[in-house]
Structures are given as C-alpha cells and as structure tokens.
Length: 580
Ligand code: PEP
Ligand code: MG
Image (cartoon, rainbow, N blue to C red; front, side, top):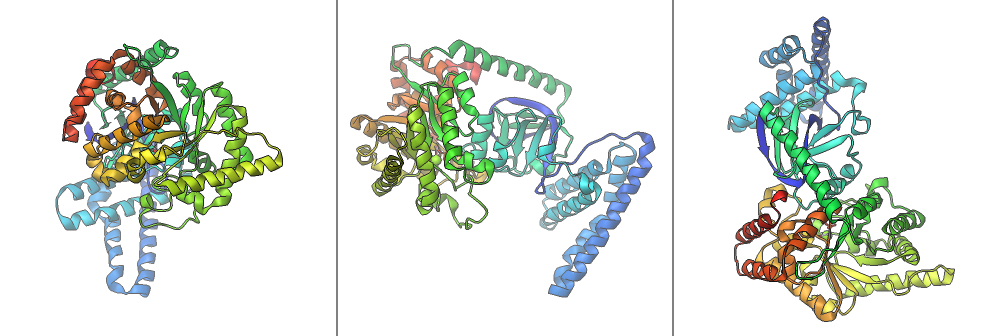
C-alpha cells in the first residue's frame, strides 16, 4: 500500500481500477492469463522487443544522417534498455510467474525502473527516466497495435490517472464510467477542478507523478475530501473507505432533502440568496434539485468547448431557454464567453500566447471577435423574452470596457428591433469583479451596471500574482490574504452604497469555511456548485449575525492568511462537524 498526497478539488470517495491515460490517451489493460497462454504471451513480448529495436535503429540511422553521430547516440540508451537483461528478466517473471499480460508486465517493470532511477538521487540516472517512458510507450504501441482503448470506449467504471485533463476533456467524462480522477498537475480553482465538482466526480490534482507511478488495472482509492490517493490499499483501508463513501453519500442526501425547500436565513433572520454555478446545460436540473434559487453563473464557454466549435445563435438560444424552463421563473445569469487562460480556446487556429492568463482572454477576446460576440448577445437577448435572464460580462478591468460591451449590446438590441424579435428591453447588465483594477474602482463601476458578481478565483490569482492552475505555487494561493479581504470588503460596500446586487461566484462561495466571513463582509448573495448549496444553507441557518460579526472581526484582525484560514476552518467545524 502506498499513499500519495495532492490537492483535494472535488469531494467524495471512490475505490476502483486505475485507467492510466498517457499522453497518447490509451489504456494499459491488466489481465491474468491461463497457464496455457504464457508461452504465446512471452513470444508476443519478444516480437514487440524486436520490432521496437528495429524501429529505434531506423530512427537512429536517419537521425545520424541529419545531425551527426553525437546526437544520434541518445538512441543507444533506448536500444540498451530494450536489450537490458535485468529489465527483460523482470518483464518475463511478471508474465511467466505472475501470469500477467505483456502490456501490464512491461508497464510495471518499466515504471519500477523509472521510480528507482528517480529515487536514487543521481542526476544522470534521473535524466534517463524520460527515456524509460519513451521505450515503454514504444513497446506498448507494438503490443497494443490497433487494440488501443480510449476514454470513449469504456465499458466498466474506472478511475482515471492522467498527467493533466483539459477542462473540455473533463466535461466530456461520463460520471457513470469515470468514478474519480487524479492528475499530476493542477490547482483547486482550475476549470478542470470546477468541472469535476460540477459532475460530482471525486478528484485529486497536483500529485506530481501519479500518472507514471501507477499502472492501468491497479486498485486504488481516491479521497477527494482530503486530497489523498492510495495505491493497492490493504483490507482495513478498503473497509474504512467503503464506510466513508457510504456515509458521505448519505450525509449529502439527508442534507439535501432536509433543506431543499427552506430558505437560507440566519438564526436571527438575515436572508441570503443561494444560487448555482453551472458549466453544462444538464446541470440546471441538479441545481434545482439541490435547492438553488437560480443560476448565478452560467459559464457559457463550455457550450463552445463541447462541440469544439461555436454554437449558432439558435443553438445557444435553445440552451438558454431550456435552462429557463427548468428554472420555472428563477433567474438565469448568463456570462458571455470567457475563453482563454486555463480554459477552452476556440479552434486550433488561435495563436499561442506567451502568457495566456494575461492575454487575449474573455471580454478582450469577444471584442476582437465581434461577429462571434454579436451571435451570443442576440441569443441571450432573445432568451430574455422567455424568463428572468441577466447578462454578465467577464474580466472587466475598467470603465471603457463596460461602455464598449454596452454599446455592442445596444447594437444587438437595435438589430432585433428592426427584425421585430422580442426581448427584455430592461435586461439587467452585470460585470464580474475579478481583476484588481476593477475591484479598486468598484465604487465608480457600480454606477454603470445593475449588479456585480465577484470572481474570487481570478481575483486571488491576479491580486497575489499566483497562477490558479499551477500546483507548484498552490501553497501561495490564499483567499484569506489581507489584500484579498480588503478588496472584497471594498467591492461589497461599493455595491451596497450604489444599491446594486453583489453576488460572489468564485469557489470561495462554495466552501463552508468562508461562509461566516463572507456574511460578515456584508455579502448576501452567493453562487456555488449545486451540490455545495445544502451545506452552505446548513451553515447559514445555524449561525446568528452576532456570531458572524465576531468571527469576521477576529479574522480581519489577523495578518497571516494561514492563521485566518485555520481559525475559519475551526469555526466551521464547530458548526458543521459532519462536513469536515
Ligand atoms: C472566478 O474567476 O472566480 C470565476 C467565477 O470565473 P472563472 O472561474 O470561470 O474564471
Ligand atoms: Mg474568472
């Protein structure tokens, strides 16, 4: 049994078989063979080695012609690995004695060597690790031939292990087949993590080398609450996790049915609005099931990501109207396209940027692609004739962007007028406050729009200069940093002074650790992953505003964000011990 610690990004537990998705996205099967098949399997392995060696020799020869002998020597190492008697013996032992299929035997042997090379602390050997993976992959390609399995052909439930999953890959996962996933890289507020929460798939990220340390078919446990992955768990651990998994689900169900139809109101009568964030159209149903009072953030970029192309005006219009029907009168906040950063890019043709997080993303992208933007504005406007639709512009950094977005919206309205198409002429317009410049002038911006939605995922990233998806700096990503709290306070106060609605739709809203603090800062509207709503409601209904004020005052007096977080966690634990 081996335990690995990463970053918990999507709660829940899963026990199952590992499906290692390597960079070529195929699966390494694990089978135990009948004794009569072992000779043939050994021969299959031998043939794969021969073919791989011939291939390497060919590559080496042509490389030598192009760049000379010295550089081509790198392939010597590959040939040596393909002939190495110790590696051979290990693979053959796994086939003949343990009766594993050749793919699994190769993968286990090569990964064990890679692990050994890495852990010896010898720089030369650790440089050889990528060569080992290269040779492993080459052998697997020969062994698997056309029989490569992909994510789309899964038949049994699995746990995916990958170096990384893109948000759109994650969005296309079927939660019935993929019961959890773990990745080498990533952070808590990455869009891959957000989508995992949306699909309620337990997930752990930032594990370093999990995708190469584990072989397909290994039995593993994913603990999405504590950020732990357990490889080959022993009997006692398995039993413990089976119990945890059952009680986690039962707790969620109980909370949902107990609280679905009651309002989020503190013990002394302060009312809080709880809305849901969604990425995919089908999540509207689960938002309603969990008791959301509306959709506070519809991340429409996933409509684009799923199809790999921009949806037409009619397709978008239908998606929004579908949401409105399910919401039966509740509000729907549609955020316009927020591509770029760690998110979806539209089409391969977009130029690579050296620093995409600070590049042509979001509203900037929409301004540079007015035809695409116009289609979305028209679709949102047309849907507004069918229910309470509000429009939200992302990544606003100053006044001029609001003016420009409003001008384009006005132009779309005039077009619809000319065509005699109905829409809500008083469509509420809001902006995301997620760039520090916007937060600092929130008092000024509040005069121009009907509502704010605070995006703490980006606000924390830009304020602290910490990439939200980079696990190497995840320990520096601190929502309780005094600078962030000051900005939040200013934005909420500015909204209140101007008499506009202020919602917070970043991941901070969905974490019960921060609920008291946010209430204490004056926030009265939150938008979070649907499944988080019952827990948030429970916290809100358990506290009084006196307790909230006292907790917030203490938290704001602290200089050390870690101390603030620990203090808030402890307060939340006292209120809702079952959730922690
Ligand atoms: C945010 O930045 O907090 C936010 C809600 O937007 P996204 O996570 O989609 O960037
Ligand atoms: Mg954002």
